[in-house]
Image (cartoon, helix red, strand yellow):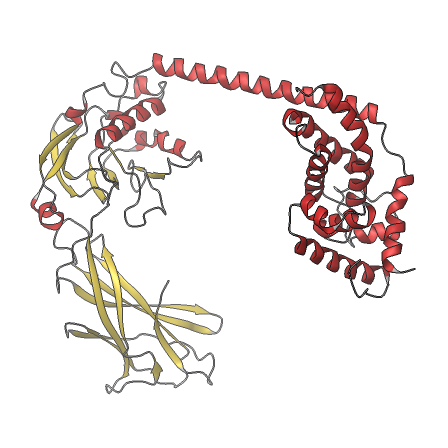
Length: 158
Length: 378
């Protein structure tokens, strides 16, 4: 069956909001998130004939968006702010500001685990790494977040 | 609140934030994709048109007249001859070429090779064009980089008035090269080299025909020439393959000690003692020399000084391309004993000994550490 633009549109309407929110958390800035997600869906559009035959095209676009977001320049609460990087949005909370201090892989792991509530195996598939690597990212990220937020370092991963 | 709960609750607040209108985003996305497609299509069209244009220009400007060189048959450029004795003795090569410069008048003379036989796969030096004093460029034609275009920029020919150095790695077994002098005289220069070796010699100025050449596509003519030459010389094995250099004649060289030193704010930080070997090559071919030598530093009375590494035998593998070659330097550091009357004595494996008085000694850097002498491995 040949996929149609209607199918793509339906897919877009369903997947855009959740992907946007995930990427929004990852990059900390609304404008950057819009650019990243639009780029990911543009690539989905170009590859739609192929990707639409996959079991879960939504996972494909999410994976692409995460990869693009990992390369995007994200605002950090750095001492010397880079003027070329947009500042975090004002509504961003302490946890989300602290999240921006983490390396991109750790940030992605935290968002997928705590916001999207995905199991480790699924996070590994989305990030293109092993389960063990995801666990390591999560462990380090939680320790760093605890330190940044003045919390006690938790004993075990969730 | 436990950390995990705090993270979850904070992150989920994003659900309350507004998401861009998907219809607007969708329309914008479609516009973006269409723009990209249009750009890509126009780029493809421009590329295709450019390619067609290049092909047409190339065909129109093929050197079928006196534009740089005429399309003479390859056998006028390359004449098979019996290999010179040196090639026969060293490699068992029986056939070589006499290479005529032919009508490549405006470009000097060039040699072509596919790789540097002494560093195979490293330099990937596929072509050297020797034009001008010390000029010439090594070009990587196998890569996708653009430097190959440098090769074809031959305007330096214009400034050559007396002699030009021609050198390069040859893809042929060469016996001699024929050069047409501006006077009309033809000179045959013995140039003995096995396939893959470096060759160099001087010739008089080329017969340059600027008038039409300057407005003509030198690159095209040179490319055409290179294509023909490489076609001609493309044989079963790569340049230098299977060849091992002949051994340099034992004892043919004359050693000489040379001293150098490096200074800084604290004085002489190291003294370099080098052995220069003169008269190494008995034939026009490069040769290979396995040399064992020991350097001992002694005081004026012939007593060995307390220096680590002094008197140790060192062996080095040398490829002598020219008749004069340097043995790697010994480096002497950290001299705290105060003796200044120092003699460097070198003993070769054949028992020959020779010496020189050192002009300086290295400064004392650390009295608690021994003075050291070692071969510079760089």
